[in-house]
Length: 475
Image (cartoon, rainbow, N blue to C red; front, top):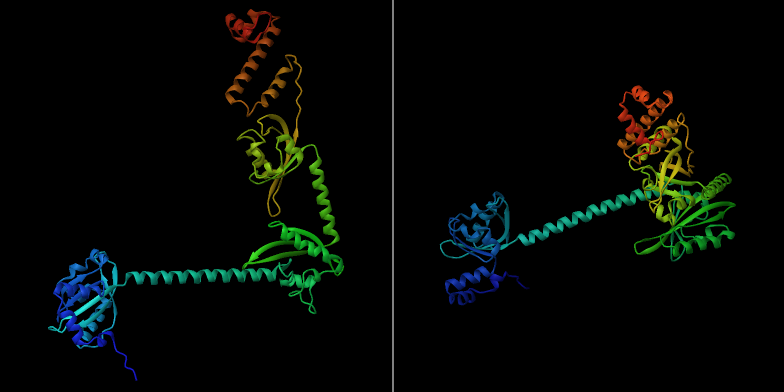
């Protein structure tokens, strides 16, 4: 029968006396302090009569200033009971055990120290040896935080998986998950079981190609091969089961270090085939019409365009157009956008709106725009039809008909020149017409014309020179 003893019991009194008796007080204190980060001698009244600190952190915390203070006064209220028990057990030579004590600091926080107290044998004195427990407490706190973080992540993953399962089961579209190695179905939602499965032969565990009619099995194998080789691209084909045609789309993804296929099936009927063919014919027509056609989102970012739009803007490919703002090509800056967008939102359509178009080389040309707003659907959008306008130079009109034609010419300058310049041009035009009318009324009598206009002869002659009217040379 073996008897287990504590380390202090295994070291005999003679050994300890021979060891410490030959050491001076300084060396003995260093030996005691080496057992921990702090060593204190406590008298019978609980006062600290000597202290040795072996930790720089504790020195910075002011442990050395506890000399002649009650040990119980340096700890928090919840640790005072532990101090009394440790001093009592040490005085009664009860086997020592480590206790964790929290000390109050001047900054208001606390420091955890693990102490062991032993009877010094002189006038009821007790030696308390402590080890700084902050590093261990910090590690424990980090461990608790890491555990809490893992539990939160696990909860989020479990909730996400629950939502995925619910969506997978309730989806009206048939969805199948296939192992990329074995080509066998590992998951299928109820919609897929209803379309191509059955009670007698469930889908899970079956080969994907074997789930369809014999003429479509090669197409099913090719679908997975295309999805595997296409990377992030989605492969599509048509499969048959029980005389019905299905549109199948497959994509490759990875989960838990395994490659899987996600296959979606939708029924193809005559009506949907007809709609698909009609939409394709419409797309072909829009690609071939001579007028530019472009589709944008509600922020005027280009979504789709035809070849005529690429020609008129001098873009090399459709990829260069996608995502760009239509404002960089169409309309006068900061003027036409508000007119276009507000009119389309209010009325839904816009016809023959005159504006300008700039290509990527900076060249401009006059165009007319017809547009429509499509607020329905998953992504509201605008559609623009852009047609080039060829303007022929007009012949010089008579004096009676020049004003309306000139006003039309001035209206096309709106947005290209400032309002100040437009007003000046309009004022000069009206002044010139008034002078010509006065000369016509007076039979080209300049003195009478100056009187009718309320001008001096010198002012009239100056304006005649300015506008080049009559037989006077233009200045």
